[in-house]
Image 1 (cartoon, helix red, strand yellow):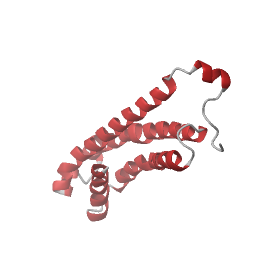
Image 2: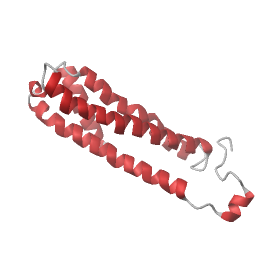
Image 3: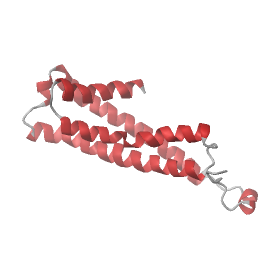
Length: 152
């Protein structure tokens, strides 16, 4: 988590606030954070919301899967496209105008995307375990919806 925040500060704060360039690319990068409230809500629901067996917890998990994939994986491809294709070909300021940071930034962007791919694999693995779990036949006969309602 520390690496994630150091990358975020370096890749967004320095180019925009210090060098006053690449604000649009930074905004696309910040869209990746759209999934963060769902990740935080997961912990809160687990600790204070009645555990992991509620429908609200399941819906939040689905929101994590879809938002993480849409904003961090698909959106991240757009971010990579901007950094590695659009900036070198079309943008008047180049990354080299940022000095040492401009040479480090592509590596940081790739590291950030690799971290997102790693966490997406973990999220998909957890979703698969939940959805592929064979139902307990005795429990399934007694209770047609094994996930508790959020109000319980």
